[in-house]
Length: 436
Ligand SMILES: [Zn+2]
Image (cartoon, rainbow, N blue to C red):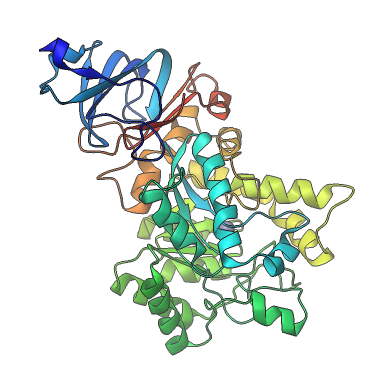
C-alpha cells in the first residue's frame, strides 16, 4: 500500500498556479495551539483533505496510517521544531489603498486595473505576514477589491481570503468621501458610496450588496485621515444610521461602523451595528451598549500609532486638518482599549492597514499586549474572535476538523513573546503552502 502512494515534492504544482497541495496533506506540529485560549499541545498531526482539516491527532502519524488509495498524493510538512497556530485574521484593512505622500496623486493617476494590481501586491505582503483572512473595510478604484477577492479565491494570485465591504458609506462631505481636490478632479476620484437621508442611504446599502459586498461599512463619525477640519463627531443622523444598519441586516450583511466620538459611536451601537472600528472616545454609555448588544470593538491601535508617528515627524505630509485630529486620536486608542478590555468588551483584531503599510499587520499584537491583553488573548482576537466577528466561526479561527486548513508557524513561543508573530516562518491557506 505504502509504495503505491505518490509523495509530492516541494516544487509548485501546475494547477493551482500558486501554493502547493496534494490529495492528503499532513502537518507535524511540534507545539500546536489548535484553539487559542485552550492548552497548547506537543507532537500533534493535522490531517488535511481538499483544503479542509479532517482530523487533529496526537503523535506524528505516518502516511500509511491514512485511508488512501493508490492514486492519492500525499505531502507531509515537518514543523516539529515550530509553534503552530491558526492562520491570522485581520478584521480591518484597506487592501487596495496605502496612505503615503503619493496616495493623493495615485488616486488620479491609477486606472481601476492599476488599483487592483496595486492591491494584489499588498495582498501578497499580507499573506506572507501570516494573515490568511482579512476583512476589507473600504475599497477604491471601482470594483477593484471585488476583482481582487475573486482572483485570490480562484487561485489566480496569492493573497488572504478577502471579505470585502466595497465603498465606505459616507454622507456628503463626510469622512468616507474624498477631500482636497479641485472640483473637476473630485468628480473623477469620488465614489458611489455617498448618501444623505434615509431613502438614499437604504439605496446605497442595497447598491453595495448588488456590487458584491460581503459586509457593510459606514462612517458614524468624522475621521483622522480625511482632509477636512470637521472634527471626529457624529456625521450621519440617527435615522440615517438606523436605515443603513437595518437595510444591511435585512440583506444578511453584518455592519461595521467607523466611530471616534461617543455621540456617533453610541448612535451606531443603539442602531445595532456588529462592530465599532476605532472606538476612540467611548464613554460609560458606550461600554453599557457594547455589553448589551454584544458588538465587537476593533481597536486599530496600529492606525493610531501610525498617524501619531506621521503627524509628529519633521517632514510630515499631513495637512494641518489631519495633523490636528491625528494628535488627538492616535494616543487615545490604547487608553480606550485598556478600559474596554477591563470591562470585558469583545475585541477583534484589526489594524486599518493601508493607513500603515501592508504586511506589518502583526505590529498590532505588541500594541494589544501593551494595552493589557495577555499574549494569548491578543492571539484570540486574531483567530477565534476574528472569525466570530466575521460570522465565520464554522470555517475559520481554529485548527479543528471541518475548518479551512489555514495554518501558520513560528520558531518561538508567542504566548511568551508576542513579537514572535512579527516573523512568520510558514504560511498555509486551504492546505496549500505559500511560505516555508
Ligand atoms: Zn479604515
